[in-house]
Length: 436
Ligand code: CMC
Image 1 (cartoon, rainbow, N blue to C red):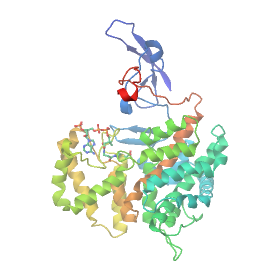
Image 2: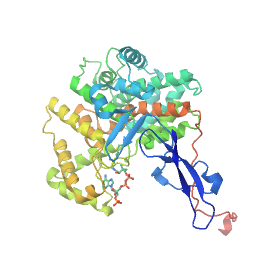
Image 3: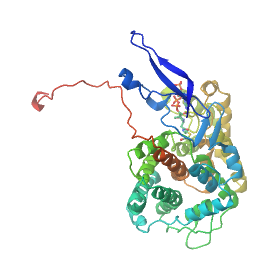
Image 4: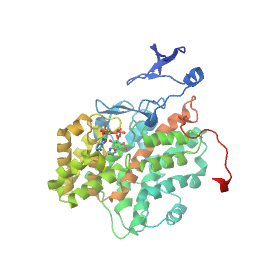
């Protein structure tokens, strides 16, 4: 970051001395006021619940311009990556800062592919869960448990350990998600097959059975690969910030990523794709397109507590660029699978059309986000709704790892420790229980 010539001055209405703060510039995006010395100089904290105006770190990985609807990974527009690169190249880019050449790509693929198998003991750990457990509950446990199975790569001060654990996380997530699915179905686990692509291998582990061969469908493989690319990173969102905060204590990467998985589960974040599909199915069951108007009235009624899931975003105040790409993929997949007349897709298009014209959404700048169409694609592929967020976690793992690595490699990194505005009771004496 570069020091700006501009400075920020904070003055107080009670006549106390004003304080000056340095301002830093990034390569693009808003400047930041460096308030690190604020407490020391004034005895005051800043108050910013939800981090509406706070940059929590310096990062060179992902940039979002929410007003323009722009998303860049290491400077490359998501639209170009989605069309010209696969998930492995995108992962290499996020982790290393540059797109790989052919040799680098082949080496990286090889490394990831040869780490896809998980320790055989992990299946016994998995078997301890109920078969009807939510996949995200299982994934939180499995990812955290990786620290027990791969303890030889948990020294965060050792770059070699950090590299191996990054590759292990990236490589084993598809295996763990597929195992979670197979377990819920009561089907045998399918071991990875190293001559398939990252995404093709995942599809096979999900849908093959030992009884017959499984042929990866190219359109489906490409669609899922695109879902992975679009979800790979998204700047300092809630789960990434969770990974950073958890990792800032010096804990191992498996523990930090497990914290990210847990955070992602929430319906305001990664759980939105599941919630969005459930919403579409519910509208369909209640009368479909004919009832869309009624549903939208509920959404606009604050008392109802109903939100249009898959709409709105903290950062995008324009169309989420990922939603455009996802809508395109959705059409391709439905056509390839002969599902052009899918009623949920039609319903989603109608909801979008109404919302984009309705002043409630227009005034609040609420547009479809990535989750609005991704659920329809996944459902068409045969992925059950309850697994959607686990697929998101699989894809986001590379982003979490890249961000965690960036933090650990930064010589200025410190344990994260926010402060608070305390409004509770002041010091008081404990009264004996009989007198309370
Ligand atoms: N449906 C109806 N109203 C909404 C919606 C929605 N989906 N999203 C925001 N609003 C309204 C909200 O009620 C508020 O209105 P008012 O100003 O009258 O009080 C206004 O828009 C601003 O909303 P907010 O909740 O203050 O905005 P936020 O930045 O805190 O929340 C959000 C962002 C994503 C949590 C929210 O838009 C939401 O709950 N969307 C639905 C869930 C969803 O699709 N999440 C996926 C996000 S993308 C995937 C990811 O990155 O994880």
